Length: 229
Length: 242
Image 1: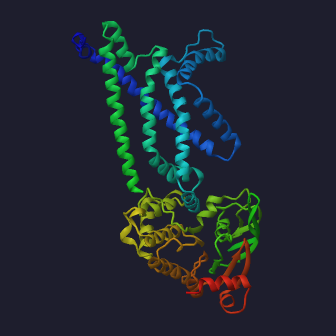
Image 2 (image 1 turned 180 degrees about the vertical axis):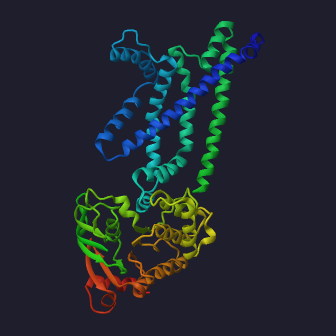
Image 3 (image 1 turned 90 degrees about the horizontal axis):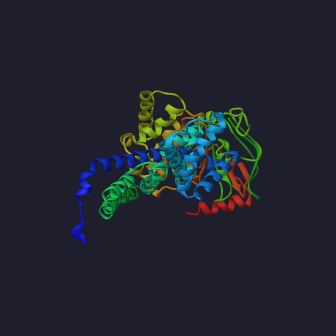
């Protein structure tokens, strides 16, 4: 049966697949950046002793971590336009489009996970470091920016990247709002040319190679940081 | 300079400080000693507000540390503090460690700060370590850098929280030498330590604490000379044994 395989289909559709891959990579990096930014804010809120800050952040994290990602993507895609119509009173108000709604959904969903990673990272910095920063007269903000977060992020780089690898795989879910990422592009070619096995094998191979080498990098980083301490 | 009036502090239902009162005059060196868990470190951390307290009052240069309106960062920038575990920032070079507060808090330029840092590093005898990272230095060197970092803020007083307890024996003297020099130059100092040699040499007063209370607050001569409380005597006999 293997003689029937036509692997030419891959080279023929490479430009289109590359378009899908650049979409996947773009969405991954943007969501990661947004997720880490939001996650840092959430983590600082959760670490605050003020209930008005830590309660909402805790509720947000628990809610999103108990919700399937695909549902969050749907929510944003269908509910945001509805909400905008309601809010603006304009029955023809446009949504923000599938790309931005997916990006926001991913960033907000990932933020919940990054929040917990960053919170643990901040707590891994010894209390004495915070005391030393305060004793010099640094403000909370300065102590965080100059002393705590740089050390916390250094400890967290491996696990942040691991979460990024998971995100990279999860972006394939954007097909539900009609976006074409690498997985979607491979799927479309497969359907069009009737080459399901070849295309899906190729897609799996690409995902595997990228994720495997990325996690190898993570492992090496981990080893390096462990030596430094 | 530093005035501590009747402060009490609780961790939950456990009282760590019981009505502690003392004062440190300008130019005075006060040594605080006592068994571990007696509240010495907590007391000294109340002076610059690193540890909050529930009752009483701490005044530094007339400014109340615990009062809600106090600009704590500004007050802390006037008081140098040296910690048991050095607490240098491991992700910064030695120079950057000493520059940080000068640039961020005092608003000095990088050149000005670096100039000052180098002078201080020379003073504590580790100038050649300037470009290194704290992890590459010995404990004694790290603690001397930490002293330089505190001095860079031109403090009106210095707090030392067991500065030699985490050091290997052969490194204790290099740190004590710096502290003795500082004391003889007239720096106001409050020092939590078990180094009775240091106390004998430069302290004006010695405070003995036990179970969150100040048991003795005496001049050096009285503390080491005249009869004193049983608990202080017992403590001294234990640590002066060797």
